Image 1 (cartoon, rainbow, N blue to C red):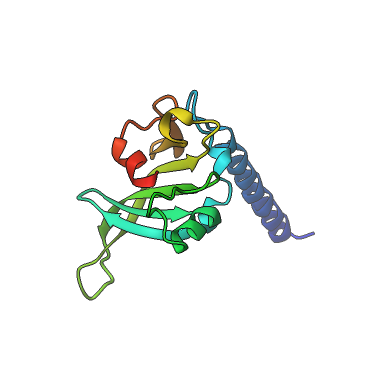
Image 2 (image 1 turned 60 degrees about the horizontal axis):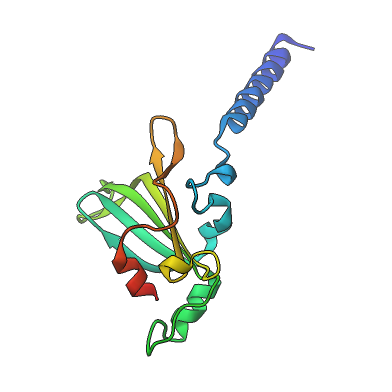
Length: 166
């Protein structure tokens, strides 16, 4: 075998070792949990949920997406006329910092870096004190490229969430 072949094999092996090391070092998000609250693993597949709304603040762009259970309830007109969302309804709010898009021919802001993932779940048996709603926030730390649970328990502390989703 030629020297070039050995160098190519060594280069590929080195790249695979680095990639394997990065995959091994990547955060296991499935084990994340807010103490006494929701676990990240309860929201598997959130990346494929349907969009409900977008919003922008001075510092963030946010997308709110809902699972099929909650989307079906929205399509039926909920919340309205005293009807509430069914158990199993789930929402994710994906929050990014934003920046101007320099390639756009007009002023437009686009997502930059992940800031946080916030989850909401309806389960009246598990969370009777909050009308069945539970909340969890996982803040993104860009320095470590990891998510960190925020707070404790399932109550977000915002009465507006509970009253809006009853």
